[in-house]
Image (cartoon, rainbow, N blue to C red; front, side, top):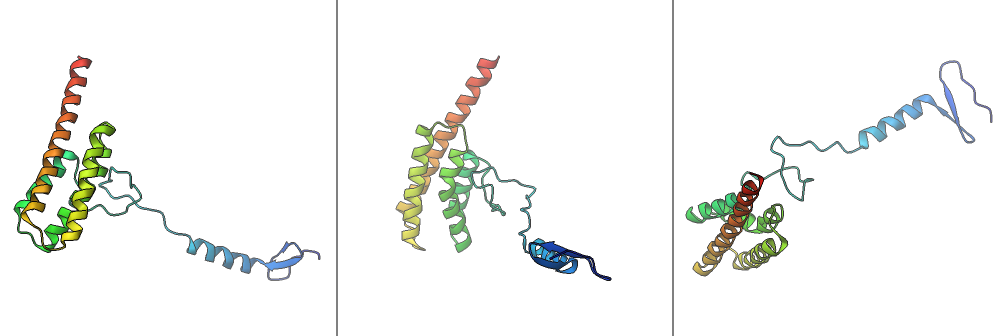
Length: 163
């Protein structure tokens, strides 16, 4: 078949078919409108392994020290549903936050394991948090503090060696 242009439309040949320019334009419009929009970055970019997340929780910690501080602050608050949910979030983020630091694997793995154990206990407890469970969260905070101190010590050693 030969390709030709008509009086009012332009035709294109694709194999043995003649396709009108209007049909091609319509097909392209459908393809472009079906394409997913790009991800927009929030002004407060999350520093984590999950950069594809679009929203960052307001209580996302800036580091290990902030994580322990936020946990302790929420433990002192009235334990309403929103506060408990934030505590659960913070406990579950300990492994990710610690892995994003300069801690050695030997130092961050215990944080991860402890946070996973406490997260499992929080889920099993539901709304009935015992004093023992609250004590385990405080013990996790102490482990976080000890790990954060190792980071501070390492930073100080690097500064001394650089001088």
